[in-house]
Length: 328
Image 1 (spheres, one colour):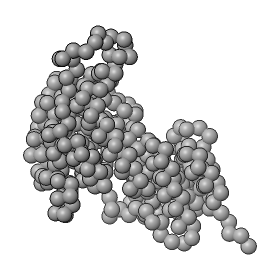
Image 2: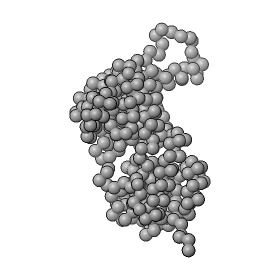
Image 3: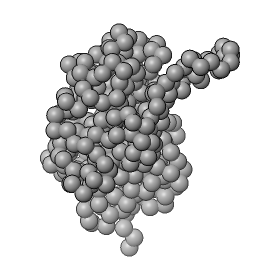
């Protein structure tokens, strides 16, 4: 007798190959619209599914988990970050949580470098002039940016993405520095030619570029607060492809407007899509719509990891990318 297939609910549109494979393997409910589910819809999904496949746009807190049905046994997150899921409460309710680590490392590191170059070389300002038809021809003093080689890059968070950024930065001739919860092994430091700073304050005060590559946790909330931002050199820039909550966005906006920081490149924001309008007005700020991981290859590989986690769980084994509270 054939085994009953798992009931899987997907909260957002996924790449077609991923949705097709999910349909082949499981009793899956897919979305026709690429919009987040409401809380009421999430409650309904969690009441009837064996497996929920959410994304970063779905906030699954203790209250929501309290309304989950007895069937729900796995939350197979589509993405590496799980700060939108109350993993502790899920564990207490006997619900496993898995994620998709390592897939988007290169994509996010590429976008980090793109933001650094865009801000340092003033690329969006040049683009705006061309789009408006205001270009009057070449000038020796027009749109002078800075040279990448020789600049000191301070990486905040030296996990897989931070290390990938370090390798790329070294290829541009940048001097790599970093602050991390744990110091890297000496051989890794040597390979990356990276200088470790135990004091984040001391590192921030000396860097030409700060790159945020740490996860969002209670300890990293506003890690770059007003006091620490003021330590930055006036000609320094900051980029963030991690989580918006790591930077105090209001303080950053004030300092950019006052000319106390030379520029910023942001792909993530403290309040999601509700971005400070004054931040949008700054010519020395590059804003992207959370597209650091947006590659076809990356999205499909993320889906493949989700599939593997669900299939392994269905076969009675621990998902290979299970998340436990101690990991966070």
